[in-house]
Image (cartoon, rainbow, N blue to C red):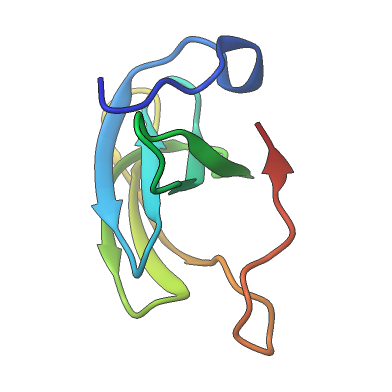
Length: 103
């Protein structure tokens, strides 16, 4: 891997999709029903600068970036049926990134 996120911070569940935003990434999980907003530093080797966790409540199948702060999530229910579309905002109203958990 390019970077390793501490296991204690994210746990164990399958990654379903990774979507780049401006200088950050959204990482969706299937079984964890979460989306992680991750920033990777410029160090050598690169290190995770922050991880912010969003609880989607459903399995996240894919992510489509709508801009530097917003994304559209396609979800699915446990039985494989399509779930609702969900919009995720990772910035505050002033456009700055939300406060995040440090790694």
